Length: 213
Image: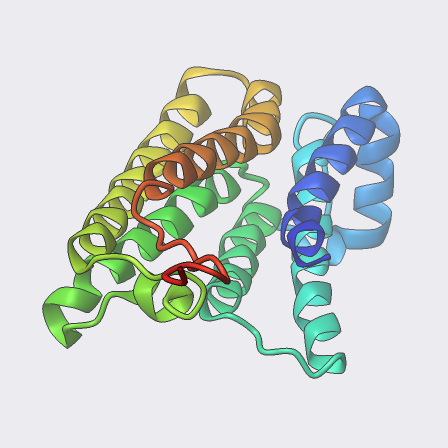
């Protein structure tokens, strides 16, 4: 359930963009009629309407994530708060200035924020954030926790750069496809590779009759 909730804003962004991209004139009229007050000049053109509407949807979806967790009495992760702030700020700039560049930068800033937090926590506070989050679920040697932390720092740094490269090297349509399939696909692949690596270090529970003659 949580995994679905985490990816829901990205899926909705993709779906809204594709729907509006297929009907740009309708999307422009709809955006102007309903969100014109939020846009500089009050008019949305067919070219920017798909990204603008998708941005509105992703802002609302992220707000809904926080609201649902609040209503269910669940703890809201710090990264979700950061994601909410970034999507509101960068999304708001995209909507007001009719400029998709701002929302394209949002994933990179989020990746780099997470990577920086993982990198600085051991240096400034002497704490490994991954160990704090996962230490109750996994027992690993200290050196492996260090490697794991470094791997995630490197992964987030690379993902931020990759997002910017795709955003500036390809069309907005290609970037939207990458945001859903590329971003999530690479995250799953990295997680699976990490699991295979950690498998050799995880402690196995002792057999019930182990040590008995």
